[in-house]
Amino acid sequence: MSEKHKIFITRPIPDNGIEMLEQHFKVKVRKKDSPISRDELSGAISQHDAVLTILTDRVDGELLDQNPNLKIVSNFAVGTDNIDINACTERGVKVGNTPEVLTTSTAECVFAHLFGLTKRLIEGDEIMRKGKYKGWGPMYMLGVELKGKTLGIVGAGRIGSEAARMAYKGFGMNIIYTDRGGNKELEQELSAKQVGFDDMLEQADFISIHVPLTRETRHMFSDNEFKKMKNSAFIINTARGPIIDEQALADALENKEIAGAGLDVFEDEPEINPGLKKMDNVTMTPHTGSATWEARSAMAKVAAQNIIGTLIEGEEPVSILNP
Image 1: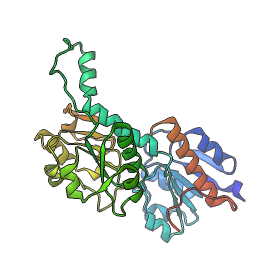
Image 2 (image 1 turned 90 degrees about the horizontal axis):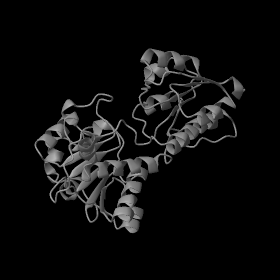
Image 3 (image 1 turned 60 degrees about the vertical axis):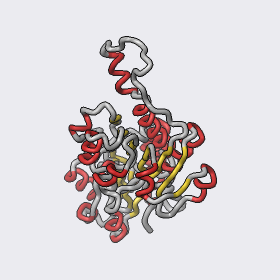
Image 4 (image 1 turned 30 degrees about the vertical axis):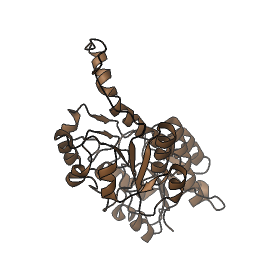
């Protein structure tokens, strides 16, 4: 019976998702709001029928072999680079994720960084707090306007497309994009133009990254790419940290090969390249692109429904990534 199924949640999530699961199953929530150790995760997998994981929880074949009766790994994220999907498929374990519901929040995060950089908000705030403001001047703290500038979208999926809409409709920016499959809807709606990757590097005033982390996209932006960008260009990453070679980024900023960077994700989270911390043309947020009550509550609902839909006959999951 479904009430006998045991569910493990690796760290606290919004209550609505937990309550959904508790209506059907025996649920154990790890109380510590910190990454779970591999040993503890291994033990949890061995004793439960479903595991609700966070993006910091790495699940591979070795862990899956601890329990041949595990039915689903439901990831509290859109990206699943922390889950070995092939290993899950080989063992008959479903993999769920939470698409669509964090699209708006993450796209808005792009603009938090764009405005932070172009309006020099971090510098200005520090000046005011430290009592360094001496009065208005015609050449003082000049920034950059967004209107009329070209935004390059790397990966025109849900989040990339929403960021493009906000840029075009809200701020009058021109949109170019790279995407393997193309996006005709975006082209029709926003007069967006699909271009080659090198063309984007050369043309864009701002680049916003929205691709998943894969072998192909790891260090997609490194020394050569930064050298091809405009000296006046800014790069924003709200996707996954290792897509950018962080040392190469620090070098490019120091050498003034690009104008600035906005980072919500980092190559070796929670560690940050020391050079980036010293730069006033870098804005940094602690992986909070989806950190709104609306988005996180919706993610909890989807992650819970993926488990319910997998374990209870007659129910449907929202998003399962493997057969």
